[in-house]
Amino acid sequence: MNGVDILGYSAGFITTLTFLPQVIKTYKEKSARDISLNMFLIAAINEVMWIVYGFLKSDMVIVLTNVVVLGMSLTMIFFKLNYSRNMNS
Image (cartoon, rainbow, N blue to C red; front, side, top):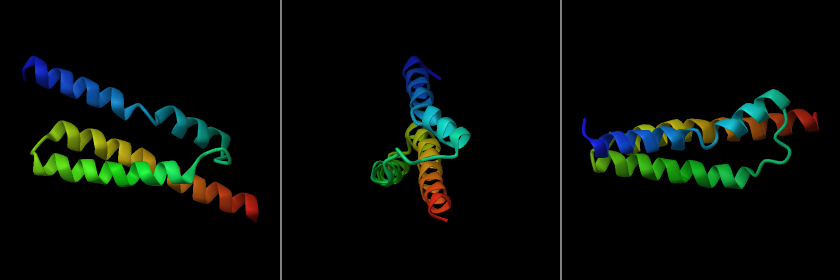
């Protein structure tokens, strides 16, 4: 692994932390009232596109980073839909 690879994996790791504080906060509070569903839907679509691009370019940094961020985006979408439904019950 060379310096460029280390930089790529390091940047990818930090990128995966982007949504983590929001996921944790939303889970602890059991509320997604102030969360934008559209933002996470757009993010999820964007992550899928990056994953496909990463596979086409055979770039595992792009694939792995975006798989993790997609997981967090989908988690936030689930929280938003689930917690909103619970508030309406």
